[in-house]
Every structure is written in structure tokens, then in C-alpha cells.
Length: 410
View (tube, rainbow, N blue to C red):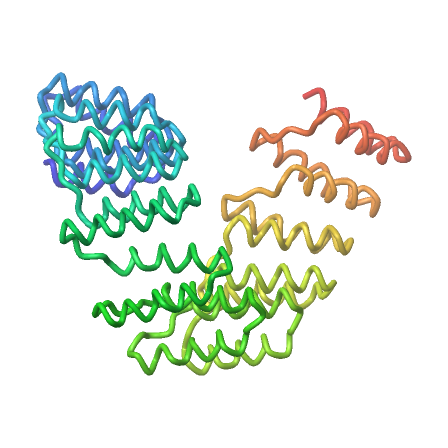
């Protein structure tokens, strides 16, 4: 009986239905166990329904359900994404009351949340108390501490952390080196980054695609595109497979400089190597074409990405709708808006205002009202200034005014 319930919970997309199913079983003599609790907790946390999470955590305590650390690590991470740092700390400190033992994995999860949210004092406090909790650092712990000092811009302390890592005979990972390479490149010290890159080889650590991408980015920032491209092809000689992230670095530099000829050559090269464009590169290309006023090319990119199986994200649609509004092709923009709505996304309110004004100027009253209705469904609100602009624009047509008044009142 438990397996079908768990399968149904995983499959149900509607959160309310999932909660209802969980409670329906609870009303019977069925006893939920850790898998069903953890499944629903993940769904609630992902939807940021933390009140629901708290209720389920209460059930776990009440019914003495023995829990795995994994569910708490996931929750700590979700609290971090929602910037509920105090909740993440509280959960970590109370894990013992859920029949779950703390380990370095949950400690690292919390430490990372603190660093990601800029809570460096809290992070240092956790570091000072870790031995009392019986927790000993591993490579991931050191990488997070390392990242903290680099984000604070303190290279000297970061290097001392690296030295301590070596003293404790904790093996540095590729991530350890990548943090340093990225930091030095951002500071313009590409030579220092190159030295670290070579040190990786000497220490028997093979750089990955991200290592190369970081160094390529540093070279590109100094105007050394050719050297960055050469480094990318040195990757293959070193046995490191080319990834989309490496092409992305070159593409960013080319589009920034407006070198569309070399960009097209790069796209042809990627096609030959069977490297598919990802949503990030498509978004860069769409953004470039709209900036250049090349609406047809931008729209072609949107179509092309869908044909190749790359799903547009909210940023893609927003770039397209913004671009169409700027070029005044509002009827075309409405088609894209429909596709955007089907995908569960919605434009920025300022873009919607621009689209409504454009449709009204073209006397597309029904279309303008449709956009307003969609705003209402999604509880997106205009400010007074936006409504004033729309009503003023509509005043030349009494039918439009009546329709807009209906939208405002009802």
C-alpha cells in the first residue's frame, strides 16, 4: 500500500492535491513513514510553503519517525534559497530531536547557506563550535571557508586556509583551485591564475572545463581573445572534453564587441562538434539581435531553440517580449506572450504596460483587454502612473474607456 502512495505523491504536480492525498491516508489507519513524509516535505519546501513544512516536522516528532539526514540537508538548502537563515540554523541545531545524527554533510550545507547569504559572523561562530559537535572538516568544508574569505576579498586569509588544508592532509579538490583561479582572474591577475593552473598539473589535479573557462574569461577580459580560444583547444590535447561553458565565454566576449562574423563561425564550429546551444547562449544571442534592431533574427533564435529541444526560460521570453515592444511589433509580441503564458511565465509589469499601450495605439482593444485579464488572473498590479498612462491613451475611443473602467472596477 505504501509504494503506490509514494509513487502518487511523487507524480502529483498540484501541491494542494498532494497535501490532500497525504491527509486522506492519515484519516485512515495508514501510518505514514519517512519516505512519504520526506517526499511531501520536499514538495512543500520547493514551493516555499514553509508553514506546511513546520506542520510536517511537528508530525515527525509526535510520531517518533526516524529520519535520514538527507531530508534536513535539503530543507537547510531551501531555507537558504529563501533567505530564511535563522530557520536553517534552528533546524540544524534541532536535528537531534528528530532521531537524526549530525554529520559533516549537514554542517557543510548550513555553512554554505551562511556564506551564500553573507552571514560571515554566523559562519565563523559555526566554525569555532564544530569540534564541540564532533564534526571534523573535509575538503568541502575547506572549500566553503575558502569561498567565504575570497568573497570578502581577503586573499591572504584565504591562502592561510589553503595552507591549513594541506597541513591537515586534506586533499585540495579541483573546486579549491577553481575558487582561486576565478578570484585572481576577476582581480586582473591572470598571470597568478596561470601559475595556479600549472600548479594543478604538478599536484596531479586535472583541470576541468570550468577551470579552463575561468582562465579563458580572465584572458578575454584583458582583450586576449585569440589566447583564450587557443586555451580552449589545448583542453582537448590535455584530455579535457570541451563543454558549452567554454564556448559561452568566447560567445560573451564576441557579442560584447559586436563581432557577429566570428560569432557565426563559432556557431558553425559548435554544430560540427555536436555541441548543442543551451538557454544561456540562446538568451545572449536573442539579446544581441534585439539591441541591434534585428527582430527577425532574434525571433528565429527563439524558434530554433524550441526546434532543437531547448526550452525557453522566463529570461528568454522577457527578452523577446521586451525586444518586440521596443520595435513596435505588438501583434507579434502578443503571440510570444501567449506562448509565455502557456509555459507558466509572465513579463515584467513595465513590459506589459508598454504592450497594452502599443495595442491600444493600433486599436487592438480586445487584445489589450486580454492582456489586462491575464494580469488580473496572476495578481499582477499596475501602479497609478501606469493606469493613468493607459487611460489617457484610451480616451480617444469611448468603447476602450468603458472596457478599461470595467477592468479597474471589477
